[in-house]
Length: 315
Image 1 (cartoon, rainbow, N blue to C red):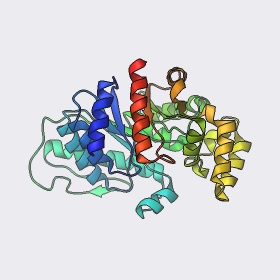
Image 2: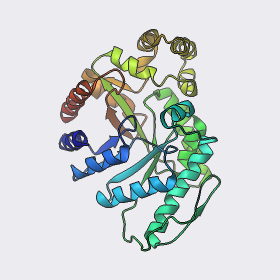
Image 3: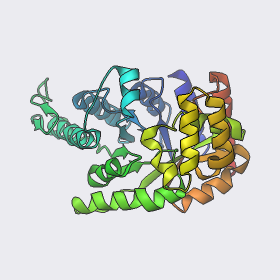
């Protein structure tokens, strides 16, 4: 959390408009509190907090307090996480993830409305929260909290179009996939709700070399995401990569990604950052910058993060 304070302040000083907190090792809401504490202007959001490892009431409570603490600068980003990873990380299973996440978002918003009024309840298809206000009293006025929903496949993406204020795209994405699959799915969901499609946040993983970026992408090459490669003309490569990973030949999988797929995915070499941002700005509404969390130790991650900020200052 101390490092989050330091790096968030540095990001704000470098000209960033927002700071996004991942949910891969540290607790994202505590880390968001640290980022809010150290900054004054940027928005701070989770990109993304794993929804199903937490009850919607617990998530609503954390986000509500962060919004108040940050003076309205907090954004709640939520994602389902792939089923096997959800089980192995948190010991939790969640069926019907798209329908469940929609109900989750509605439950969170119902809790917020109850906090604002001092009373309320929620009964949905998956979640029932009869007493979200346990200690009597209302919080009004209170900042409005945007919700971003993450997705890769079109069913979950359509849910984001239907209920979210923003769509958190995955770095395991290509411009072709974003244009041909993500945008139409967002539009379909938005049409169901008779609203405009939400803006797209596209994160780019920034690395010093192609091999480290390819290794990071192996963590996302899972059966649930292979459609990204299939729709981008990389079906045979997806077969080869998934076979190598299944056989625990991750180095070979990374080599295939580096040679055949990397240039299409949401990555950027540090030296080519301006060019990659220009490329993705033609397809996404907001660009986020991150560093690999797999294959780099803590000191290397922090050093790279600071070099990314220096590059940001020069843009």
